[in-house]
Image (cartoon, rainbow, N blue to C red; front, top):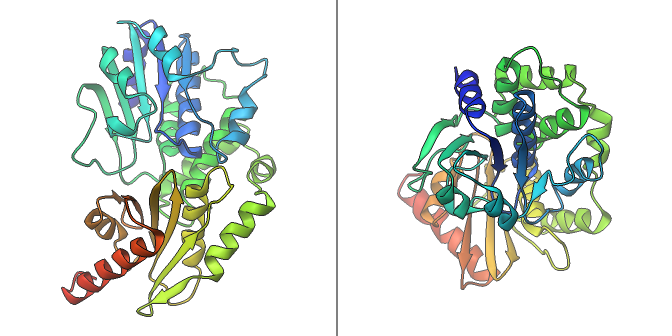
Length: 331
């Protein structure tokens, strides 16, 4: 149903511009690539809006640059996208439903037709004027959702290996190697992509880390404090590293491998803010904890940003929040 709705919207217009969230990740870029393939299968032009390439997306983005299969102007900056958009452009937003954190919020005001695909629970701020909105919090990733739609767009879709790899990687990263939030449909999407040329060896090699990043993550894990016997709290120093917040999130995942840890919190200082990554396996709802600090997310993956505090103060705030919630019986 969603596939046919999308097909009708795209075929009725001239072109498509697709974007994810700011500080893009593998799932948002992979989903952009999936929408690109759907649009090309429907014989319409498509562009991806991407301003800053993060460390996590760089290996994937490079697969599409200087590649004869793809247009030279496949990837646009916000300004180029704003110059290109017309009344007959469909703007597709993936992996985000909050206008303020999309790659180019102004695009939503200029576009007459907006489509949203996201797997995050909607908060108070949502994209209002969407013609089609497909928000599925039970999906593991936006790449899973887009892969499903690709299967229903018709027989004539030919997915290139680069695209299958990008989408498979999106599912893999968002599920922490198929360990979190995986449903039956996650594996069906992965099998579909595997059949269409996704190659595990290529993906594994794309996502190896450089030594400094690996060390920063290892330091965060080794210096973690286990608070109240169940909450691992640590700091990831991002000094001199291009995408420290992503390392913080990965370190938070690592801490869940310690027996007895119910939830983990990593604080990373970046661009004069403290980014907190919170993770849990099943017993603790980190979304609720992060909402108390002005953030949000999912049951077992959440985060927030704090301004005007030091790392030490941020940790104290997290501990105080945990204390209060435990005393009030919320944890």
